[in-house]
Length: 272
Image 1 (cartoon, one colour):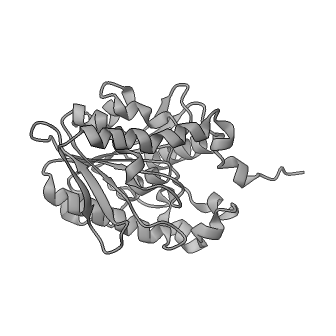
Image 2 (image 1 turned 30 degrees about the vertical axis):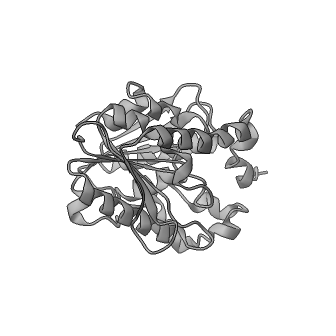
């Protein structure tokens, strides 16, 4: 008899992380503290019409090497940019400007709408900062980061040609399993959108270097997604690497972004 997969359990992170809710509760506190002491920033820059379509842009002390992006996760259902400012630290240490966008959430919009919004946010920030563009995102943000590197990217040619690296951290690259979760009552992913919005079914932009990063003690489904994404685009001749953060789970795998000399930060912020 074939085993039935409990997809809700497969994508449940907090239930398997000790003190998960304490970790999450600390994010907005740490982010506010970072913004309070870091003065060289443009906050709440609008890039679209809705109240959530805004980004924060943190500038380094010197002329920036280029523009880095960090896109937050939350299954396209939760959070905004205000919980993640502290993760800009590694980029600033390496002399990158870094933009953190908010975006509208499901069920008010579809994931395909969010993809377009992230494209608009990056385009807006790219007008303010010259040089190469390196994009990262965590969880659902990892999906959105990789969507920027697909041939059907929402980015204009003038912006996409500046993108050199994309790093998905615990990313979601195949949306089909999420159609089988209770979350899809709000995500409203159709089979057509699952195909269109899943990077694993898309063709990559060839000049970009990609990394699928994941914590070694995350839920098996996140590790599988990262490995499958790496294998699929490797077959397409893409420069894509699989990177595993030892002893990291879904809620602390991004902590390495705060430290410029960490392996994860080097993957993202080292110039090509």
